[in-house]
Amino acid sequence: MNFNEMIDRYVNEVGEYLPRKMRADIEMELRSLLLDALEERADEEPSAKETAAFLQEFGSPETIAAQYRPAEALIGPTLFPTYKVVVTITVSIIGVLHLLLLGVTLWSGNGAAWLDMVLNSVFSFGRSAILNAGIVTIIFALLERIPVEPLALPEKNREVWDPFTLPPVKDPNRIKRAELIVGIFFGLLFLVWLNVFSGWLSGANFGEEGTGVWVLVTPEFMRLVPLFSASLLLDVGLKTAVLIQGRWNRITRTVELGTTLFGLFVAYRIFSLEQISTVPFFTTMVKIGLAVALVIGSIEMIGKLIRLLFGRPFTPRTFIKSKLA
Image (cartoon, rainbow, N blue to C red; front, side, top):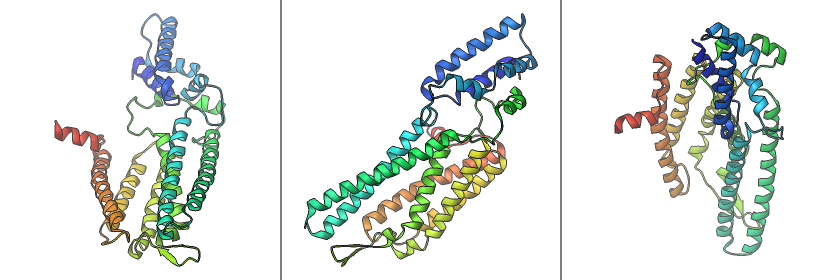
């Protein structure tokens, strides 16, 4: 590794801890600053060892990135874009569920007292949206203040930090923290909803005396809920382990291959059901979605196997581009 590659790795690692909007400008400024400082220290091209010593004096990537971040807030700039996406998706899901429930309620009520039903649904949506947005805010505020890396004193981190361990600029084992956090959050949310509130799927009473019963899914689907839950739990557990570890490795990649295969098996079991929902339209739409997911998931699993065996990256996007070229 020469000094240019080490500088590129260092600047790229600093950029990983910065908000996307300000990342490019700061990386350019930091690279220029580092190169100028190295030129002043040595008349000739510095060696990798000299560059590493200089970077150790300059500070770890996390320390330097913290100096460029805006003032501290409840949710910092690194997590705030992810926070907005999670809140938007959460409120949207709540809105869709309330609209479906309102439609079924109006249909079962035969138009009686429809205004009261609409107002009750609006107020219920408002309460649920505020409550869930508050829960998401608390979770992200805690994530902002709880380090993902193993707990250690800052002084110790500076002592053991080694520039030679900086990952390559294009590192397939680098984690995407925001993507993992979103996956964990919605995986847990869906897992809890599927097991705690699964009665809403299998049947609900409507009408003033509860005489009307509306069933969304079939008993055959409900029997697959434990398998579905196990698949979600494995996925959440793997994402949590990788997030804590800070990087992918061969062991976690192997586990990822197994969880993907199990998830495809569960999806196929659901797809093979003759009826998923008591509403034929819902069954058709779910089966179309599952068919697409099975095709894409199979291609992704092949890519993960190729990457695990040969160390070469493979994605559905590159596969499709190669076929169209």
